[in-house]
Length: 230
Image (cartoon, rainbow, N blue to C red; front, side, top):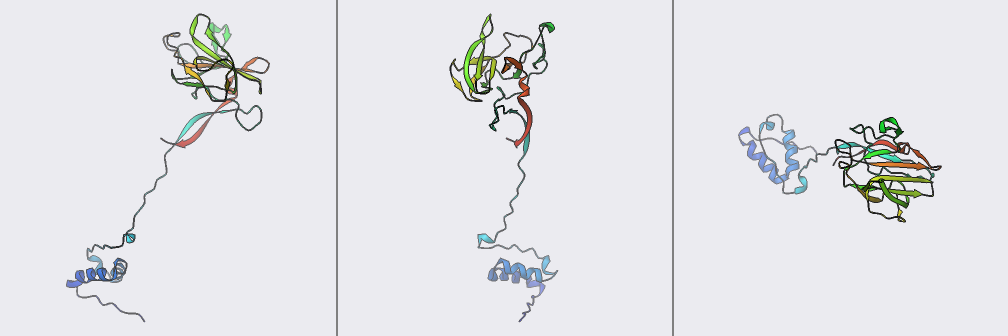
């Protein structure tokens, strides 16, 4: 059977509402207020509850910020589903500076010879990694008259490629076995050798089977990936 609730006079509504909430609880009190009509809605009544579970907590969520990061994807030469090459510095090739371009085939010595590698930019002192897996087959000098600038040669007999990374202070020795991406040394700054504006970089030569130097960007493709911003 439906019961009718009769509101008291306006002068005692505030006291009546407070008593109702205290007796019946916040949930019933709110229901009474909603059914009381426009007159009851004018009152400023604060409802509290002894039950913490009766509180309504609003969770504000947001989508994490993301950024696009330039990466390099190594080619899979042997078909095992894994890359066989990696960027030795993780940075882009050297663009034009006071000494020319760092691209493969760029003009050198006034056009008398082509650039035989790709120059990948680097911060002096940062780690440089093995661009291929294999064995360290040689550690030599980039220039016959300079004992500071060295290169590391890595040979991968499984795929037949040889990699040479110049301008590093090696942390490996001839005969060492290296995994792809393992640290081979630290980058050497080039200001002393090339003052006046050469960008610090490593010179990366890649020799394909048959002893032909190839453009490393053929096996290290640039692409952008989306990552969470830090």
